[in-house]
Length: 365
Image (cartoon, rainbow, N blue to C red; front, side, top):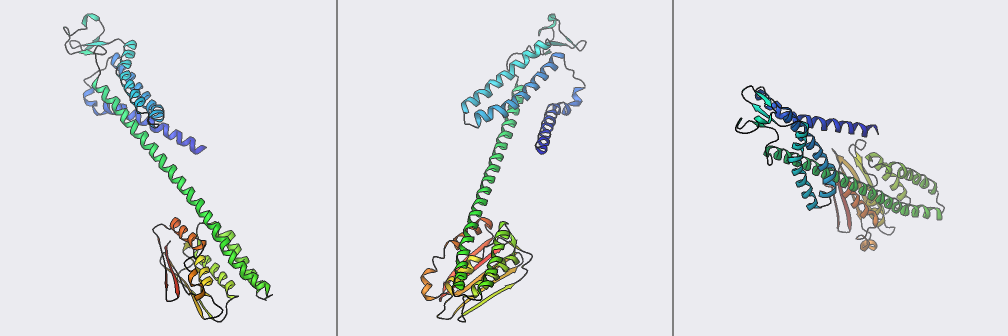
């Protein structure tokens, strides 16, 4: 609330300063010539009436006419309102000034303004008429009105455009945040579904590895509940998470699987979006592990400056070869999250050659 009040005060002060500068600038520019020039009471009243009307018209245009007509594409009503305001400005302030102070004539003999009707007329003082006896529109006032109209309309249109852009960006950000939250909620159940299946298999055979596996899963759940609530986490935390996942997978591996997981570079200094790598690791175990023939899985994470490089290479078990093209919702979610969080800052490629499936992902943090 104090911020809004301060903003209003600053806006009011800025408007007042702008009007003061606008109305005094012509007199400051022509100050040397004004020493030989004096204003009559009627001229002073006319200037004040004109200035007051210009201020009123500016706010009428920006606060009423533009929002009500121009913004709603009521072009005819807006044009008619501006034309009516122009005619009002050219004639009404002059009449009001006349009521305040009668028009005067400048007497060049004694350099004074005279209200005596006997002096009013071109036969006495040709070209010296001062005040309200001129007929027709004043070109200077017309230009001044059009200037106020143009400035006010341009400022209002720009402000409305900026406000629209800000609203659009806020809407897009909210949509992205909602979509990212939804994608994360899909990643987590997908991961736990596979992990719980492994622990269930251990429990069925009453393996002594069940308790350590539950502890590993507890650490993984703690990571999911705490770290993944943040947009970015230390890369080292993500690496520890993958270590725990691999340890859980090892309980079902045989000697026929050659597993290698290596890291290189500064893992503690870089931040990364959580759960980006785990779907690829999951699929490497899902499609690259066999209990009947030899297979291999190679996982690598390294850094190069502000770049994170992740890669996996796994042997494709022949019986699963046809399933590699459909890797489930996990991979699709990661691709979408990469598009949302690292637009233009990531490259993802997958290849399948000679019964080996490889993933290469580079992210600029």
